[in-house]
Length: 171
Image (cartoon, rainbow, N blue to C red):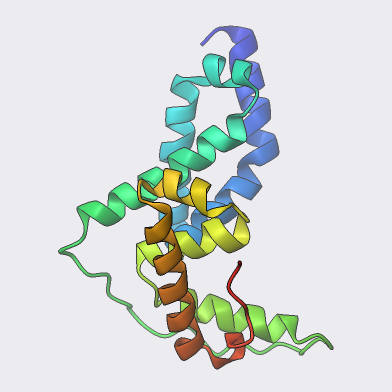
């Protein structure tokens, strides 16, 4: 990488790594896995930085890498199961008037019980707020598959976390 491109890449990473790490963490549910996923994504981004930077959409490119790498790991581990090593310690929080703190804690607890694919669908649709067509393109599936995955995932979330029963599916 030439000196100017390398400096621009370093500036981009310094500016965006927090947001990108949050996406990786939401996908993986584990700090170390999120760090590994983000490292792979940033390495792949660095290889194509001059072209991606010129295109003006490095965020979209790196998000696509994150999701595809995450799904690739999922596809490679179909026959292997993740094992929860223990329960999270009880978390106490003062409930704010809107109940958002309690809802966030409940949601973080149940995200770990979803499959990689289900977690990816939730992150893409609700955290990233992407339309179904973009989710389908990122995940390499059809829009119909995304719709059914969203429906099944929300149904599972409502069973695992009754506090979420009032969340409506997007139209």
